[in-house]
Amino acid sequence: MKRQNSANVTGSPSRYFSTTQNQFGDILKQITHNCNNKPIKKASSPNPNGQLQKRIKTQTSCSKMPNQNSQNKKASSSVPKNRLEYYTIHEQIGSGKFGKVYKCVLNSTKKIYAIKMIDKQQLKKNQMNHQLQREVTIQQMLKHPNIIQLIEFFETATNYCLVMEYANGGTLFQSLMRQNNKRYSEPAASNMIKQVALAIQQMQKQSIIHRDLKPENILWSDGVLKISDFGWSIQDKKERDTLCGTIDYLPPEMVYGQSYDNSIDLWSLGVLTFELTTGKTPFQIQEGFALQFPDHLSGDVKDLMKGLLAEKKNRKSIDWVLNHVWLC
Ligand SMILES: Nc1ncnc2c1ncn2[C@@H]1O[C@H](COP(=O)(O)OP(=O)(O)OP(=O)(O)O)[C@@H](O)[C@H]1O
Image (tube, rainbow, N blue to C red):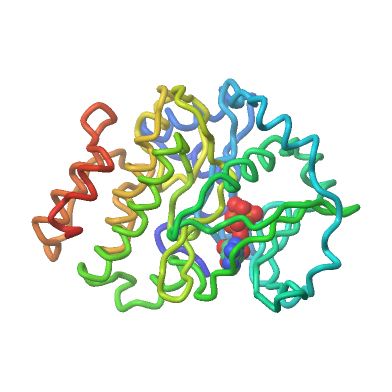
């Protein structure tokens, strides 16, 4: 399913940026080319018409990858061996950069899970082992009703396997696309934003930054929203400067190559609020960060978004969000 607000982006993202005339696009182009000279990559291959199937995603590490702490090193050296025989694998339910996600059943309990099977060779070829290591380490730490739980992690001869809690309702992006005008009513959106905010609060308590919050990475499970895909997440208290995430959701400090902290997830929450209530993301890459609201929005939701879609030093906290009248 193609995202409407990236439908005008055809061909390779680097071509798109090279034809963008304004300063904002030029800065972003410069940032990405400064980063090991790698262009921004897209999340999936163009279809035969050259149109992107998904929102453009940055996958460029700027200047340095986060330090790997001793806990991460330990995780990599002790990957449990093949436990696939304990599961029966069913149909494919999703796919990602380096692997596929299947529904599966644990034979002993008959309980349903999702298993992400990541091709070891592909991962190694793309030098992404450290990223998987981080995803696993972080997801193992997180236990919250609004976060997909990682049940176990093991390797086979060809794959790394992440067994996760199964979300049976698809992604928030898919459900959003089914709504009239591709947007939710404010009461419905408020309920969803509160759930995502509670997950962010938990992540902040554990010094975790997700760095890629968007409707495609939020899953429905029996009417409850759960954050998934911790592939870009990091844990520690240091400020960061790695450029990653999805273009429509990038905060200004990341775009302009400044250091950032866990408040980038709050920026993403602001973009998500805008998208759920209007059917569009607030900022187009060629227009910078001028915030304009459609007339139908209430004063309360606009106030919440102004608090979140603010420059880093003025951005409100997660506690402010959870006490905001629009979420009560
Ligand atoms: N726990 C789950 N329950 C149900 N479906 C899931 C689950 N985890 C992932 N999926 C499905 O698989 C898809 C891909 O999963 P995920 O985004 O984690 O993979 P990825 O390799 O990190 O993807 P990407 O390349 O977009 O970053 C999701 O969009 C979703 O449809």
